[in-house]
Length: 247
Image (cartoon, rainbow, N blue to C red; front, top):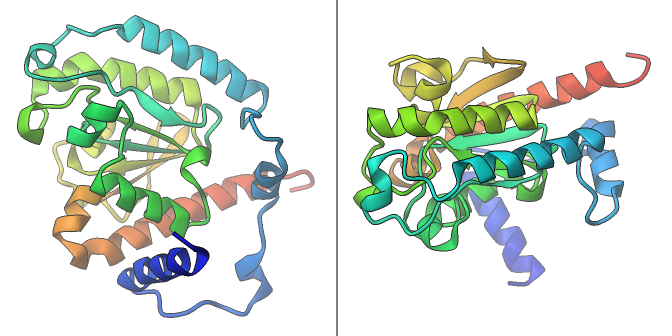
């Protein structure tokens, strides 16, 4: 795909979100100090410095503890492999979804199917890349026929998710869909009731929004998802400004 096709695709996505232009205000194009540091970091460096390196070690330990998991019935219901997580161990922004689908089960990477491609566009729409964030799911194995996770499956898997979040220590968490939001917030409220507000999870601020798979089925809700993403990005920017020297 050439640059023109990439730009066309990006503008189409923004149009679907209801964005009909950009600002000439220099602040629109200004890169926050934290983002500038990310851009200047040498290739292969772990974002977050020592914190990122420590998180990488902790994540490796969690993955080893998970092993070839047989803690719930999903291991005998057709899963091919465990889908642990992907992204920067030093990420300031973490996305948490529901469970792997068919493509994820094949590749061992979360959010690589159609919903994952949409998530990538959503991340790029707020000026970030997948390499800068961390992406995981509540459930690490694909449920049969992509059915909803069952309570015993969530109970078996959620401790590993909680440890992932603790290891990474994100500033902001975006919970994608009902199951992620309910698991993290310990509530039975639906995502429609939860979204549009900021919650606290440990030391992070949590923004619930619709799952990309739902947005593929209900494109009229993309505008709502865009508002949630803007909220998450504003929280990141506020945190970076507060941490800047002299603030």
